[in-house]
Length: 112
Image (cartoon, rainbow, N blue to C red; front, side):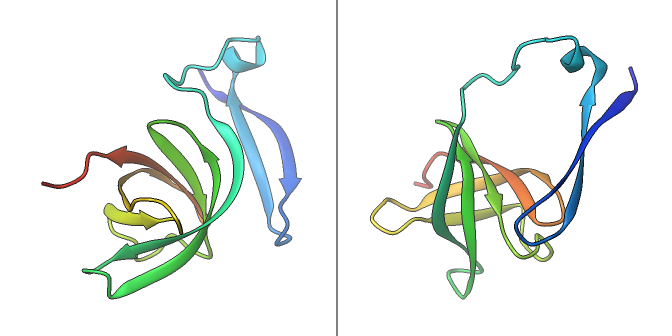
């Protein structure tokens, strides 16, 4: 089934985004995610290269198993990294998807 253009929106930075949904979603099909997500605005830091590289990001939504991160660019970020939120344990992440300034991550178990 081909995607259908649903809406175009402008984010806070002024960038225009086009949102595509499959026709099945237009017909009212329910959310397919295993775990519900809640919208957030949590400041965090992505770290990799043994902590030598640090990039600020915002956690835009969150679930038990993953999150959507917003950042300046996703270029140069490896497939796995640590997500640091002040006052919380460091969370190891694997990239599930990438867009220009957003990425979805899956939370991974802590390394032994």
